[in-house]
Length: 302
Image (cartoon, rainbow, N blue to C red; front, side, top):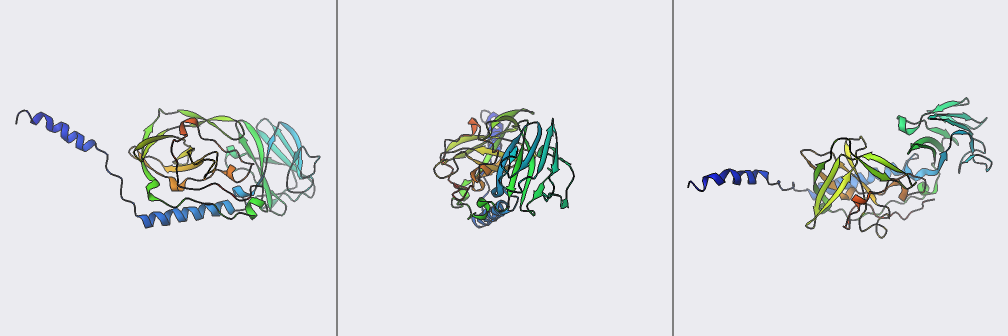
């Protein structure tokens, strides 16, 4: 007995340190949850100000520029009147002076005098509506540069949208993950489709197992209280969008989170050529076919 007693604390410690099994999934409830999420996702896309309505992305250099549909404008739009107005960018300050009769409306109020444009990096951006409210633009800031993002509710991708194809909902793709935190303040370089590279907050990595193999994804923190994952996998270019997909996961509790790949979705660039989508970092290229979530979009993109 004297020889066995010293081993008991070790045995108890081993039993206590074992990871608990993942909770059982109610398949019917999970299906209803994913179907509801899909419906909300498509409803957001279909909105007049959703990603399907993008018709232009125009980079703005410092100086004063005419804006409108005619070919003689410095910034030529695909929609709207011949001359919409004049945009002036000085440093980080932008102003817009409407052309006479342009029908500019901001916040429901008609605008005939020059006003300040608040870009999206400073909070709620100024949305400038025209064409009787069917079209609009706002100023965005990406990698230190400014651009006009233009929308039209009559755009072909929105009018011709027939939904998104999905893999069958599979609870097996709702996987438990371990969160490995990085030191505070760490960032990771994220490239986007415009060719820019920006540092983004990288709080840690999620580690999960599929078919007995461990995989790892670096997570981003957008300040929304969730982990944001940009990943590529072996379905890209064949069954899913070639540049990868996005996924959000709950912020970890006690070092654990859940990755539900049934919620993996296409970036805005899958629907048009006027977005500034981030791309998966090299660390997030999975040697795995993630047969869950959204498939390649085959509807109109212009």
